[in-house]
Image (cartoon, rainbow, N blue to C red; front, side, top):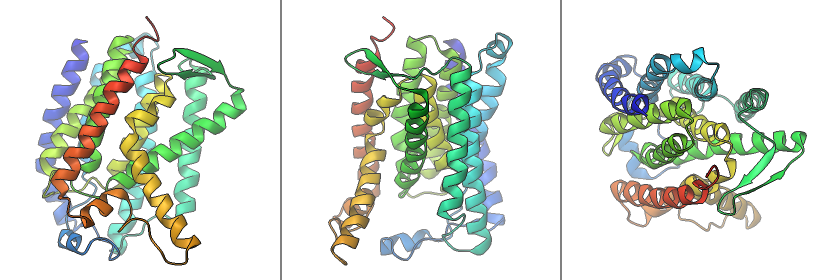
Length: 328
């Protein structure tokens, strides 16, 4: 438990200090974000704001997991390392995407098929590792009712890959305004840290705690008006962390609750595109995803982050109640 507290506090400090160094470096590199012209017109004022700022909370998380996980590694407890590596793979995919965007000075990086294949490969490999090391069973746990039902392993693999890739990209879609992805993910990390402590999976709690501290420090620079964006480097890492922890704790269905905002954002995008194609140009939302729809309706970025984070916090409390009796 003490190691988890240390991971939160120390990661906060490391990330905050890293930000003071990283932002000027990104400015000198001219690593500015290109804003899509199809987005809200007032977002064009953010053109040139440094991106790839997710590197700062990735740094804080990696350092604390590396420093605090030695006792677990010596005892062959590898869950925290597996989740960290999984999230890092997605962070690297995001970094490559950001690099090409910055290099070409436009808001396109890797192609959709390239990103999908890389993400799918990472998801399959991670699932196999968790299964082989005993962290994951093919028995799907149902929160609240405290029951599990067996799923054939090939079918579970397909399910896991679909959920992981979907979750990662849902978090990426949520990263659309200052502080939103980081703010929403803070209560999610609190939830996973609490569950890890409750079930004595301290190696996973160190990871989620370190990321929690890192996100809180990142918000110093990313809250409106943002001095830096996390970029795909940060958002894909966050997505990998969220789904990695859910599967590492063997409670993937809890993502429906803790990821309620990620899901709402993604569904709004899917519905908008589908309806637009079916009706040859009509729209349901003023603009997709959901945060842009509400912005167009007069919501400020601060209000959006506050409301969406509050909704996620309530959902996480319900989710905790739903899983707390599993190992009673």
